[in-house]
Length: 71
Image (cartoon, rainbow, N blue to C red; front, side, top):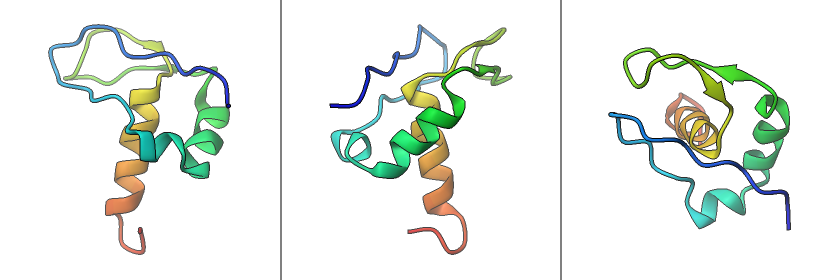
């Protein structure tokens, strides 16, 4: 099993955790390896920045899937 991905701290914006299907998607783990050391800020969703989390990977996967040519 791949390593544990941190979940998101409380935010006023609902950040859903990755689904089981996402955790089984190889793209999830490739994205996680690329961003896991990043400090990420999402203005309008929470203040400041935090370490990369599984919810950030989920947001990236959803954006990729919604883009032209996505899944």
